[in-house]
Image 1 (cartoon, rainbow, N blue to C red):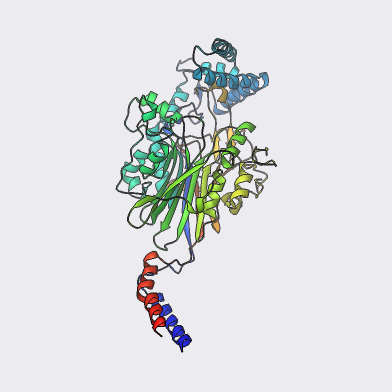
Image 2 (cartoon, rainbow, N blue to C red):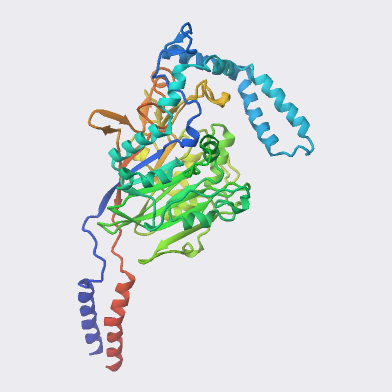
Length: 554
């Protein structure tokens, strides 16, 4: 009799539970589509460095009426030949050596041993590099009206901001991952942009750029204050403290109140998504500078499903040692990694430790942590500064050769949208051999750059990536503006570096960054039904407890 009564009570409990108003209701749809826009927008503080564009041609050496002019093709040939000449003579190596020794000299005290010798070496290298063909080219076009027009009409931030905003709003993404954003405040106060998007997990907070003082110990982003500042800001923004973007803007704009560091940010569409968790993984550093990987968990309001978005910006450089540097931040068990997060508990944001005392040993382990969460899907969007075909190299943490592309695929278990969309093979090789250059950047610095060694260095490669465990992805090839103009999105395909590619460099009047935006629809699965805490209390108080007492009495 006890058994029959118990079975009857269980049936009653199940019926009541299924019809309880406190149970979370889920949409019948099993999947939903999240539109992501991934974009390194080129920081304002880093933008005015002689990026080359040939759209204002012919290009004159100076404003003199008798000045010699060059067509776009002729000008690019001059740049290419100067670069080849400096490479062949070993001049580019001298530029690299000069840069390294200048950094050392800047850090040394004048009374330190070896200071005089190093100062003398720097002076000698400067004298030698002044004979460079690239330096000669720089001097030749120092007063070119067309190159000055590039700075004024293309690289000016006010023009680039308006263009970036226009492209983003027309693309209409649900989630935006930005790198090199040093105007978070401007995006948040812009009437059109802020009407749809935010990066503030707590709407009652107002974002303010960090405060730097003459005493670095009191700075908002000093090493011992960095974590607390970015958590307290309640912004999905991971700044690079003491960044070059901040330094260069400070020199240019003085004490303007909106001067900020550049970093990574995540914005989302307010009407359909709600943030429920914000976290940061701090990258180990032995200097005063700090930066972090940014992770955000969002809830889709219509379906209640949650998904994770992670973004970061890996170190730049095309040399093998730079790939090793990138691999070291992806996986480095010997370094000290720290991660902190805040979570929303239905009333407020509170800091909580990661579950099971998660032990992160690099960026890929942090991404994998989210990728392995039950009932959620993960999107990892980044400027990797590394192409899929980068020659494999052996890092200190591995017994075999690898590269950034291979390491992310192997360690996270995620798939690349470039593979899902049939742009690349899983090996990183292009699907379309006649056009082997599959690219998200097409840029070159010209004679007006303050970095002579980078003049003529044509970067034509795929370094912007999105990885996901979403079921499928669909790329957009362009964004239509006013039904007239099409703005290209990544990836673009080229046959070679010469010709079409070098005559369509970015930034341009059409493209406000040196990176193309990636616009992709990602299909993510709906999470399985979960029982809320209030629902558990409801069952316990009104059903399980009476049931238990009844059985005891029987």
